Amino acid sequence: MQRLRSEIERIGVSELARKAGVARNSLYNWSEKGNIPMDKLFLLAEYGVNVDYILNGQSQDATSSVMDEFGLIPVREDIEVSAGAGAFVGMEDSSAYCMAFRKDWLNSRGLKEKDLYVVFTRGDSMEPTISDQDSLLVNTAEKMPHDGHIYVIRSQDTLWVKRIQKLLNGSLLLISDNKIYPPMELNLNEASDVEIIGKVVSSSKNFY
Image 1 (cartoon, helix red, strand yellow):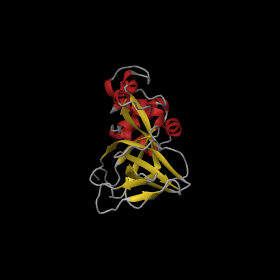
Image 2 (spheres, rainbow, N blue to C red):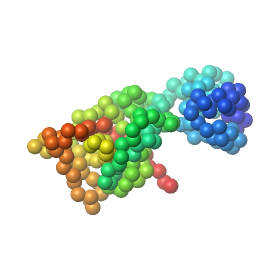
Image 3 (cartoon, one colour):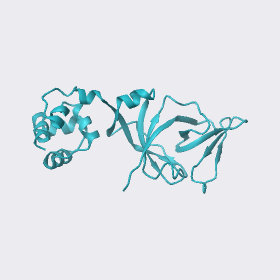
Image 4 (cartoon, helix red, strand yellow):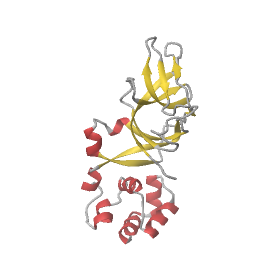
């Protein structure tokens, strides 16, 4: 796509790669093939790439109506949440790129961009609902547990994604959808370093 190439060249490959935190080779490949993932396109738009011009040939600035329709949610590639025995928590709060979600979809569910991030799962304990390497949209504003809902829970340096059931003794029962995995009881009174990170509000399948 010539318009994609011209926009990248207009800003400068080195400058755009530095600002957006993407590899120069990726920019070259996207411009040569004329094919770029939508979330990467919206990421580049934050640094001056004109999305409307690339998609529609319209000469508008990067804060166009196309960008106004989408919210960019950071992807935490440095951590995985376990649908299994538990995954180690990444130490740095960083994101290499974002995923695009329609703002009207977020607004209809009362979700705020600042409270959201995307993580990936590891393991099969939440099958068939959540599979290995599925992406999860997590709302960190929802930390109060409600029975039957799915949450990301941290215990010391371990993260789980599980359904939650509150018990009368104040503990949480962490339930796997895959019935070969038994429920785990987490005693909040005895565990000093336990935190509900947020509620899983959406998941996306990856077929690879």
